[in-house]
Amino acid sequence: MFQIDNNYVKEVFRQEVRKKIENISHTTMYWDMKELCRQVSLSETTVKETFFYEEGFPKFRVGIKWLINAKLAEEFLAKWSSQQPNH
Image (cartoon, rainbow, N blue to C red; front, side, top):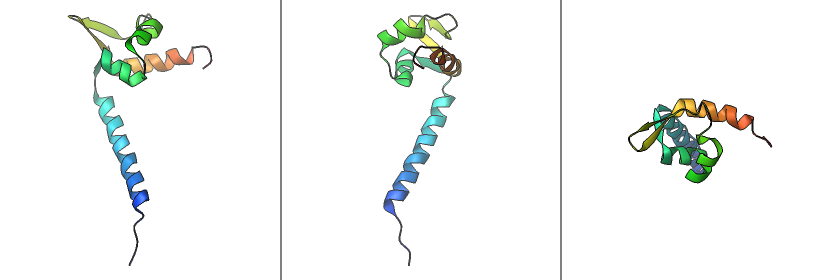
């Protein structure tokens, strides 16, 4: 007879769920402002004051709503953040 380490099984399960969630988030083509804020863990005010209006940030307006290309935003933010002081 063998024993199963329940803590190990739970941790492996959590890791696999995280992977699936990351894959789902990468299949999203556009973010709205709320999702952008969630992705970067910043308030809308902070987002707008720091990088949202920077030249090259991939956004466009549909009616009154901003849409952000998720993949291009990730690329922009990776480059932008590496250029910030204290990075």
